[in-house]
Figure: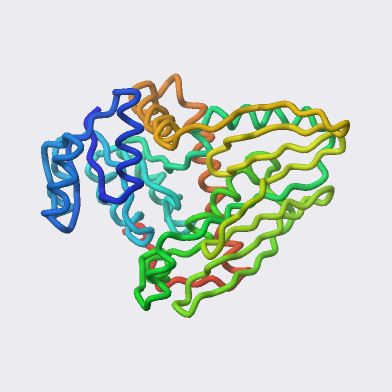
Length: 332
């Protein structure tokens, strides 16, 4: 399957490197507003074409498009590619609003193409290891899911620059970038909460630099914390009355183990290279395209999970007062 990439950032490079592990997706084209940058990126990765015009890309012969542009561009770029009959794998958050996502899912169906969110958690085989491990720790009493990672862009922000990740007009900020990695497992493991409470700490730019959310389930509370302004040194934890699951990385599901009440430990999985995790995404997406009958159930799960996550993210933003200078797309 020949595919194009929109964006030339490190995440795009990581995806291309991951896709090469399985070899079923071939980078054929690069879209960049900067032709020189796009050309250098294409040459580095063996892509034969560079586009600076989205309409030209949409009219090209590529089979699929991987979108890794700023969040505010996701929905409109996806819409254009879906209308052109391209399969789309879009980086998280796949859209800004749930309404956009529902519209684009319907558009994909009407055009007979695959449309999925590029989120490591759902494509990671360790997801099933984690789900199975829940049955080993007794009754779940609470959980703390954390993704706090000091942003490499924060020094530039402190110098007076405005990186996209700290720009509300890009529909960006900590929740959209890191918090989503906590929301996905919370919903996948424990279902839709009875209530969501949330708060955020804001930068002068108006973007949320850190935040937290409380998912209330009646018999347990799942706490989500996330920050781009500091580096976590602790594990995410899921507490049961017979043991505790510890995860070094909630986004990658690595260095995961169970510590039982008697102090004994059970290792579940160690470290996994980022490119391999991205390779799982690429392989999973290619199978959705090439074997739709065999992957129908998983595709349905991906769509339901993406929509549930988008709705929860919207609720968190409302509770925390997170606002974007952004106009959602609507069906024409």
